[in-house]
Image (cartoon, rainbow, N blue to C red; front, side, top):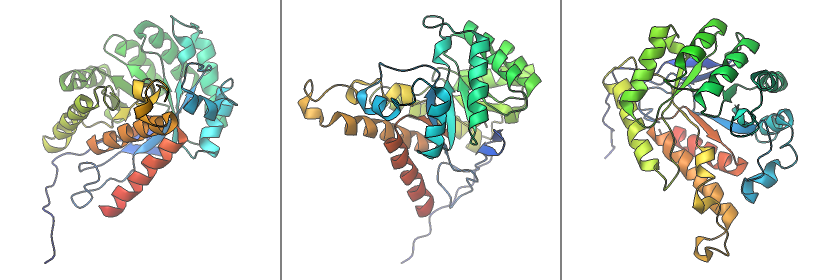
Length: 313
């Protein structure tokens, strides 16, 4: 006897946001990979991390992959594009952290321009979650890269006016960041829309937890985001979702602690790669549109999972 799966059509759909020259995220009108019920015109995008300064504190498993390019974000981005076949680059402007190197907005913007000019794939730009400094830095990035469709973030309630105004003026998408709360995510979207940011220039970052470190709560929040957008037709929640998961997964104890310290945990490199891949795959199933990842082997595993889900659906 053949089985016909039940079909439940959604009331709403996720807006499509253009990133870079030709990249597109969002656009689905069904739950993740429910392709018998609707369409996902754009596969989830995997953006690989690039930092604007070396990261000596990273675990050896990932540090050795990038040790030849850590001093040069342009070379780092090209390696991710050319060697690891990243869908996009997420440039993390760690040097601008006021508690760290405290690089100037001008220096950060110049780095962004250099990286953007060197690659052919979409670019996302992330600050350090310091609201005041991010406002200065991301405004300068938008000014330096007008009409580039480079999403800038994280934008929160404290700095949404400054960054939102710059993004509108220079036509850049913005990534709104809220702390694992559906109501706060909607409120920030409403504030930016009221400011004048076009709805098809908004991406949501709902905060990401790593496997074993809040992932289940993050998953439930994203499910509620998607229920509101798709089943309830809430047009203030119909934005693509970005998960900045790499920093969270690679600071987890299980992806860093040595075999000598925890002999029952197994090989530390394999463990770290799987920690990132499982976190990313879980987020795919909860509705993300953009994954920010670090290890190329984890990226390969997730890409294989996406292909399998698309084929089975």
